[in-house]
Image (cartoon, rainbow, N blue to C red; front, top):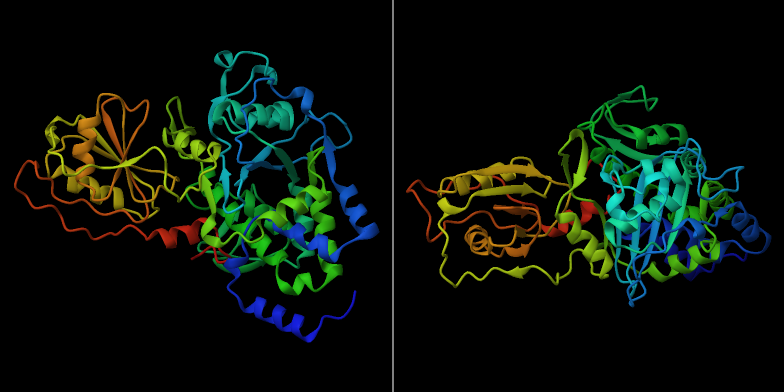
Length: 483
């Protein structure tokens, strides 16, 4: 390789001084470097490392129709066992478990990227014995990650497509054991844990503070669940999203790109840990990565499917009605933070026809991650005469305030929405007489209604929702996960 020119060195020096978060796009960005720094025999060796499976015969014949805008949806699976290793059977995975499931959505115009995490504890309909020929109405409800264990990528794709309507173009399974090699090839990956971790199941013990984790520690870190946070899969998902982003940052650092030997070591470990569909070779990865390499930070979102406790088992979760809003965004190729086609601004000029006392119930859902916000807003509603106001939290990140209602509750929803300046309303199934209020970043706090009841003053807010810009930075899981 020829020596870089003075101008090239200056450009690279400037690149290293740019904020790291601006280099976060997706894991695919790593493969852009392959096209420029690796060629010839090295390219073929790396491409040959990837295991490929033909699952076409096991996929459902009733798949969603891809939209015309040419978006790409890639299913990313983190597994304890390399799929099909030594078996050659793409439909069966003996002993494999999917600890992590992500859908990376690359928009048709390649101007935004959305990475959706699906909690493994989600209870969803799964084809019995992974036989997608069975009508969906006969599918039993099972834990989401059972699909991969029972039938590999094909069963998981059939499950996702049937429950979301999102067409999956490609899949890639990352073996967590190979994941260790990727971290070691980078010389470790820095993390910051705000609390001490001592998890025997994950074989990890860390003091609170900053650490550079080696491969074995990193594997334990992304598996920690029972001794850090609230013990739920949702907390682990957030940690995994942050760590994946840290890997991308380390892999795309200028210092690595200038060292072909180190870059090759990382790519060798990465490709050895991959199992993909037959069309997802290194060339396809390079082309996809190149197509999104100019996506900016404000157009990249890491999100988790909105969930709530499963009605039959509090240790499991079920998708909320807001999950359909997320899947609609993916299906119609809309950015999550862009204008939505469904919710409409609340018409505040028309007189309110429903008294707060006649609103059967209001569920205030905190979608900001700021503790105490839902209770504050609920108290401000109660003092104005709403008889039943409950609170909850969600991992969804709807910007502003979204007021959801079921058929027949339009006027009740208008009364609730009038308490939240700038709120939007949306019709949703399954809410009954309850009005659901999702408070997201950029929301305005409750104001006094013109038809309120009682005379006690509306409490002054002491907690403010975060701005949308700060939440976008949090969703992109920047390097310092303590921030």
